[in-house]
Amino acid sequence: MSSRSMPIKSTLKYFNIILAFLIFANIFDMAGTIGIKYVSYIFVILYLILNFRSISLKKDILIIGLALFIFGPIFSLGWGIVNGGDIALGITQITAFFVMIIFFLFINSSEPMKTIRYIYFFLFCLSLVIIVLFFLVYIEPNTFYLLKLNILHKDRAGYFGFRTLGSTLLPNIYFPATLFLVPAFIYFYFIKNKLGMFICLGALICSFSKAAFIIIIMFLALIQFTRKLSFRSLIPLLLIIILIFGVNYFVPAWGNEIVNSLKGETQTSQVRIDHYKSFKDLLDEKPIYLIIGQGVGTSFYSSATGTFVSNIEIDHINTIRKFGIVWFLLFGLIVLNISIKLISSSNNELKGCGYALIFSFIVTGTNPVLLSPLSLMLIVASYKALEGNYVLRG
Image (tube, rainbow, N blue to C red):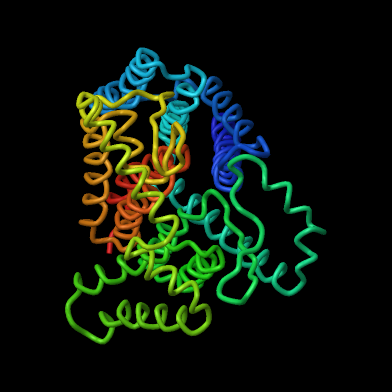
């Protein structure tokens, strides 16, 4: 073995360890409650500093990156300050773009499919954790307190407790990264990993995420119409029927909640509707906000809470309010472009990455996680996977 190959292998080993830790931290500590998420960023920055000579960027990527993900957020911060926004809050609302940039630089010279596979592997692990915790607490409720899960009740750490469905008290295990199990389900569906697919689906049901369940039904319905009629093409339809009847049989109260959500008759639906109406009132008062946004760090009065709020659960609207519809449309077009290119591939894994990305963009808009570091990392990893079209065939 040559003396030159040893440092390369050593560097690759450290890269893999840091990449795994980075993704694990951003999935399991998405809100930064424990702090390992921030530690992972330090390791990435140190790696980039030590390997700065290996960093290279295409000219078109550099222009898009500078315009959309550096100048755009900086302008939004400045505009937010002009509109009376909180500087500290504004900075926290654009730090995800900094993470996105260093993440892109970090994985730029890696194997095309490595990062996306790491992401979906750790989302599978998250699914297992959710299911195990759910049944552990269901079988022995006191375990909830013995395991000190109440530690996770800290700010933005998710929800870990109990909820009543009908006359039944059930555990409710909800991590901030739960919605990303939707793209994980879709990815596993395309690579024919039945275990991964059903574990992700089981975890979403254990989390009682109505939006995730509805969007999975939407995905299965869409796939039903993209294939030639055959017995195999009927599998998505059978899955839809099994899911709907299964939910109605085992947890009918949750099934009713899903139906009422679609009708806009649940409390959470009404809150979202009131947020949207208040957003429209804001635009009536300041039409310029539709074009360039109100700026990050700002807040607006919402009748849903009777107070001024800086974030709302309909994150597509949330993003438009902060950055403007011009920025949002450009951002959406980038995601759509990556998705279409992946979906048009002849390789099933790449197709899965494409469908997973577009449905991730949809589902993350139902909670304020569309511009979270994990969401942006998934977009970057999906873009990187495009290079796999040259090495994955069939």
